[in-house]
Amino acid sequence: MTKTLINQTVAILMDGNNIERSIHEQSRSTNTMVNFDTLIPKLLNGRGLNRLIYFREGKQISYKLAERLHENYYGSVVACHKSADIPLSIKATQLSPKVDTIIIMSGDSDYVDLVTHLKSEGVRVEIAAVQETTAKILIEEADYFHPITKDDWFEYTPSKRKYEHS
Image (cartoon, rainbow, N blue to C red; front, side, top):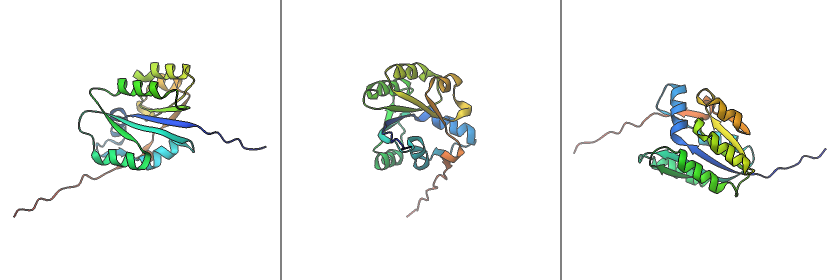
């Protein structure tokens, strides 16, 4: 029996605030971050990455994060006026004719209608989120669910800056 190679293109759209809150809740620390270096390859599982977009509410977006996502995955960070729901949904709808699969990184039930719509357009929709904080209906509606576990995040130590007096 010959093995069939499946060539899929994937877009990963991340609701940064939702994932961060979930990870902080599970780790009981606000100094916990997603480890993109392990999580992205796991989510892709050999498939091609078309787009990686990190949607983040508020103006305070880490320049280092944006730079890392761009350098490693040609990713981008989008600042959202309020919640990421609407900008992420618009981008997913725009990308749907260009990709085979869209992975939504969020456990928010607000995305159920988006998942249903994308699937009706012939797009495979996968959810990646912390299982304990993910709406059951979202998991049921998706084609596949990737649980984000403690193996997918790390604790960082904020640097303490020393100021010298002259």
